Length: 178
Image (cartoon, rainbow, N blue to C red; front, top):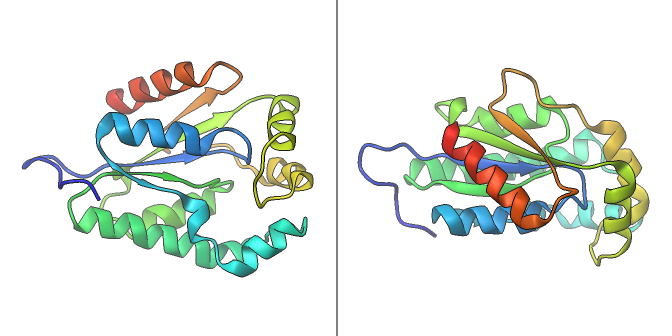
């Protein structure tokens, strides 16, 4: 866990979002290291039943995601209460999911979303070439579920077709400007 933020500053929370295969973990780890913030791998908070479903190629529904999102929201709230900033990975495919993540915080503006995106064929190739519990066949269901971030949501959308260093640099700039 990182040290609390300096006196006078308020904790911030960056949620790195996007469908599977966009590089959320890679980018989030780099952001956490750059800022000296706590890193939270959202996949680690999935209940075993969710992992079993995704491993079997069965898409999660809102009911499946509810306890996972609640656990992530609780983690954000705990870091906030402890005075620590964090970087969290979470697909956050729908506005309602992002609302859950913000709900436990006293100030929803403490959350900044870094949404990673790329053309479907780029992401599909990445998903097919990696080892992960989510079956590659589920990518289409995630893309179909995705609701773009609203203009009122503090966020940046970054094309991950570029090298990871460019994605991270772009994300750092957007976070610093927010």
